Image (cartoon, rainbow, N blue to C red; front, side):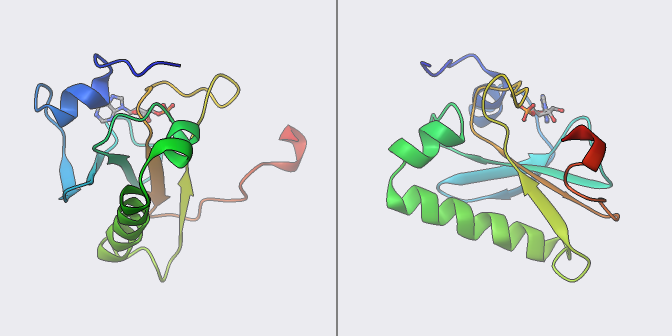
Length: 122
Ligand code: AMP
């Protein structure tokens, strides 16, 4: 799947759309989800043009991948989520209902998140 330069996160990265920014460095931007599913719901995105985790894991440089993982952990620590706990999740493709075709990590926290998948949903 080719990268779509008009996706909403590409527009945020270009400064064409505002975001509630929490963190930024050379490789990473993190901002609050516009429709939070939990008290804390942050999106962490690479600045490079990657469609999804599949694309990022295959094509990003080791520096980008390391920077992304380090930044994601730091953001969770800075939000005070290490002791209570948090969940990270990334949707790839149709079965996962990925909506925005720019790789992003969801960081959820701020309440007991329950089990990852309900037994009846298996
Ligand atoms: P996904 O289904 O994994 O692609 O999730 C996309 C996420 O992006 C959803 O949780 C949306 O609420 C969120 N989102 C969409 N537009 C914006 C925006 N302009 N600012 C912040 N979050 C957004």
